[in-house]
Image 1 (cartoon, helix red, strand yellow):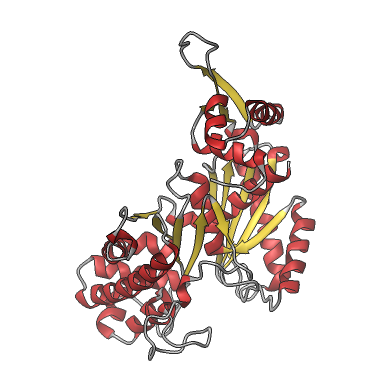
Image 2: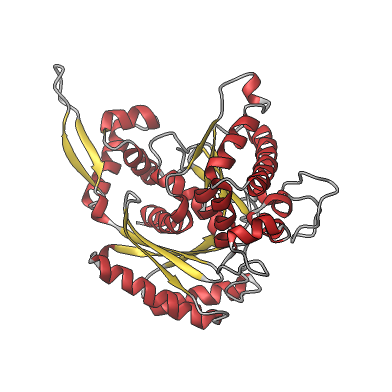
Length: 392
């Protein structure tokens, strides 16, 4: 859990991930002097972010005093925007979800329409939960895709910046924006017990395949803020053309949208799943994918084979990334993972066991997130909390 030179954030992270700890333990884990730890801890106590929570039994010297995070010291709103709806969560400082809501979005509302809808939803969830608005650090808003967002009608970073500015003016609090998969990775780290997500590849299944990369407790963004874009790993040199223009990307072959497209072409899957004539007929790609996963779970062999092929292709791409990055763990998350994790997780685990690193060292942990359905929104809130700690 390294935060560079931001020693205050480093100390806070260690306390947050440890439930409670002592100053002596913080000295041991950070390598900082006792005086430095005392100064930083005192500052966090004065800001109300930490509190003293009892003492260890005396062993002859001065008993150690434990410190813990004050969960209700700060709150944050996380918003996940898609083409059809938005999922909102309100979390406390530890990432525990205090309130959650989902709202449909009018078709093609434009940036002004999205801004108004987000403003109303944020107000609703804050009022509905009754939290102290003065303790609300801001709102995180995440969308699918790279630096720009098709659902918002934003064709450039400048467009997205203007949208963020309009949100700040409407909501009256700081607003941060990012990619949904990247945010989901940060959210997974924020709520995971100590060490479980410090060095992880977080794989996000929504309408497509995304990902985030955590190294030493830090979110790696890359030079274009797209580090972890797992969906564009090639698994077939002669495969179909992907939306990115390349051939054989795993998203084009095995992403949830690709699965739905293949299901539509098979009456033995499309009929039982209740799919319409085109992708998104049930409201979204994720809803269509969930319908395919449901009939597979109920015994439709053709649907199960389709998901199994998707899972194996995704697993191969994950093994390639793990071989390059030597991750300690792989975490599967996102709304599509929530409905099909039982198929995807074993395939990923089996493939990762064949990775180069496992032949010489420890096994790589593969697990399903406990927050698949709200991963992006939770990550959006975590962005705000993380920023608040570093800037306060």
